[in-house]
Image 1 (cartoon, rainbow, N blue to C red):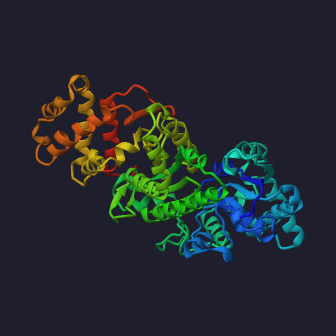
Image 2 (cartoon, rainbow, N blue to C red):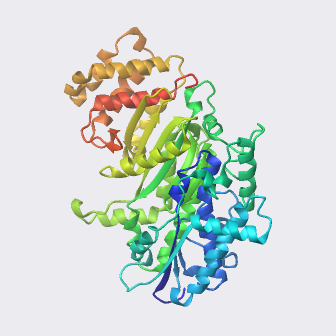
Amino acid sequence: MSQNNHYIAITIGPIGDMMGLVRKPTALWGASYIFSYISKRLCELIVEKKVAAASSDIITPFFVAEEDAKNENEKSLMDRRDGVGLFHDHIIVRADLSKNREVMKEIKREVIENVASILAPENCDTPEKQKAYADQIEKYILIAVCGFEKDGTGNAIMYCGKQLDSLELPKQFAAAEEKHPILSRLQSRRDNDASATIKAIAERFGVDMKQWQLTLEKNSGRDVRDLPDIAAASRAPGFKKNKYYCILRADGDNMSKIISGLPDDEKCREFSRICLDYCAKVAAAVKTYGGATIFAGGDDLFAIVPCQGVDPETGKMITVLEFTQSICKIFRASFRKEIEAIEKANLNQPENKRVPVPSLSFGAYICYRKFPLYEAIERSGALLFGVAKNTAHKNCVAVHLQKHAGQSEELVISNTVLADESNRFFERFNFLISNSKDQDEILLSASNKILLFNHLLAAAPSENVKNVFENVFDDDFHTDKRSDFLHVFLPDMYEICRKPDQIVLYERDRALKTADPAKTLAQLIRFMKFFVEKGDM
């Protein structure tokens, strides 16, 4: 790795604006993948054209030229054919911009022309038309570049944060979707046309249709998956959950605590490699579960998943709530050394000076398969950043179930509760939603009765809560196997709801500070009830 303090920082966009205007999963994928492709292509050209002395001078994202790859894992990360965008929108290169200003202009234009050639409609059949289309594309894609010199304080990633943020301010974007030269290619009013076009575009990007997570496996006359196809991956015909999909988003908490402790560029680059490897593993888990990864870069995840899918570890069917913990396991395993180092340092510090341990927060927005995708995208973002990451300790799952009939259930559940095996949370959850012929009715009855006896439960000390549940649920209907659920599992879950910041309600995109255990448990039961409800809507 060359030794100088000159850097080039690049930011690419506007990803969020473009993704917010789409109607189909394929268009959403395309609007995201374009930017990951641009990021990787920029890295390739920066090395090819000797802006960087070597691949190792690209600090983030992790990139290695084919000839520099040290092992099969690095080769596979660079040569992915599954269409998962792993390259995020910020690039930091150890290089002097003053010596490479003209070359960077050439690289930017070459990348734009490359993207234009992939997206170009059939009528762009002359050099003049191709140039005109590339000029159009250039107005809608921001590739902003700046140079900076590190003065020795902090590492390059932390140092250039403000510079990158300022670069993202200027942008050109048309609100009218039909006039947009990129979005108009990614989706069409006619499904068959859109399917054929996006498939051709994906193949030009180098995606293998057999590996693509949006390829429709069954022969249905279409080539790509739509929202009903993803929702149906729950494999639960006759149940409502088979008609609902979930926008699942995840973002790392307190990751700056790791980054700020990286002493040099080499450690920063190694951290970038860990992030890339983590995202590849998460994308694979999403595929096994039955979903489609839209983007996985840095510590972020954006996916469309079914409400119930296949556990990546056991092959059993699990709910999306349990799947979030599968992702947490991958996160903790990927960043184990960094997390353990912070935890060890905290042991020698008083509580008020301990550093927050990195974790994951989730926003899970569940809605009917005909619910507008762009609106679900917006609401899932509000869930993640306005609710989950706005709680006191983050490290939680904010879930919103929007019923087609209009009712909704909203909860924030701490990952601490979900991950703690002593809570037996998922054992209880799965027992509640076991396929009993009258489980739907039992759950409805339990939810209503808990609210009815709210004051009695609130006054009961912990050692008497189970007695209250036994006396409240004392009909013949509440006997046999149901007694485990009503007299054992529910009181235990009520006790969890009593603990501060473990399971809370929220409204208007914010967590409620005042906990009401009975209302919280009742809403949690109604959320569980969704998984055993039968019908179409």
